[in-house]
Length: 468
Image (cartoon, rainbow, N blue to C red; front, side):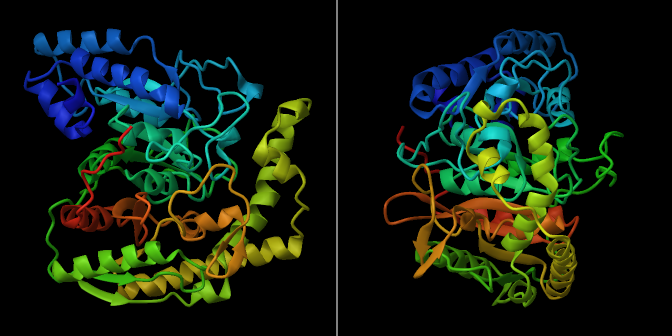
């Protein structure tokens, strides 16, 4: 039964607990046993919550007494270590914050707990949540459960590796340019970055630049993403970017009056893409077309005028560098990869900064034009499958690109705030998961979830798990 629990999604676990076919204690213990068995190889979990079993016992007693039951009653979940967790270490991937224990939960954590979820553990991340793989001076490097010599991505690589390896059914992550969707693609799980502001960032660090950071769930199934999103979305009265009311329809199972219109692309100005990744996107497009959707190859001319990754870099230096300098002042010996990289970057000129700002507006106009013709955009999540550790410059399609190029297909939706989802749909020739990305118009989360649910049902790899 323990093995079954670690392979079930959160929705199934909640049903098993609610109907008395399993206890929360059994479910939590199964995941704790799994952590003990495989985490030494992965280093994805950095803190196990000592009170998880006590909370599970209380959940079972509450259920037996006929108490109110939330949609995640008794179900464990994990949390990226950039989210505040009351009474539990939150160290942000840096010795500068070693031993830090917050007094309150981040809004997203509190909402999961209010739904009956039990915080099981905190997961690894890069220093300050800034890098394309999860490694830091405090808690070390996380390995990919599909291949220990490869990265599970960043910055939510600990979260993605935990779910892929069966140590957690559901988790909370954050996304600045790739950090929810890329790690999910690298490890073969699913993840969702809703429209900017849909889920409050209160209690999540860092916040700079606030307009690019998003909170999103990671899971084993699309229905779990929909469930988590329904619990997490809505203003909290503290995050000024989170203002849209939480009432909405997740859209799963919905049948529109006309065929859903899907436009798919592989690069369209975003740079080179691995051939197997491109083939997986095309296979997903063909599957959706076979299922009755209107699917056409498309492009977004705005990508030809403004490279989103270049825009992101210019703005990031201007907006993040001062925040990091404040944190690291006097702790220079405790700086790691990205804080050192950023400190050495030349300041963005005001002319370049203003051009980048205008570039975002042009990208938003480009998406407005695209989504007037299409409901969903299908494209790669990452430009390559999961890469080796300590990624530097690499060659792709005859071009030498920076390590940030893996995020060139995800960063546009952080700049403009559009919702985007990552899910596996293929496998590389050397056995690594390959994901595809679905994006939609602002606040059209139900559309993405509907299409993703259908695509999940068509996938031949949805139940594959790493051998670890």
